[in-house]
Image (cartoon, rainbow, N blue to C red; front, side, top):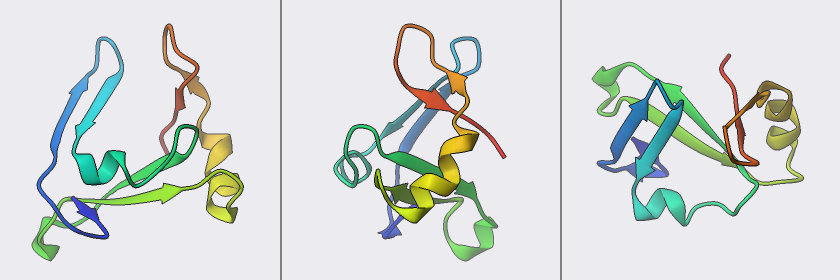
Length: 83
């Protein structure tokens, strides 16, 4: 993934639970609770497979992405979405 720079990230998705885990300290520390993480799949020929952007609360990108976060996570206040 590219999180500012290209890094190896342990990523896991459980479709039954709709649970996405991104295990990387650089990613975890790049945002704050309530921010939106935008994960975009890119062509692997660029040297990485996913581009990561953090949209801080109150930013223009956050406002643009918020309507897409319309699927609740069970037993959580978190939301996610696809487009």
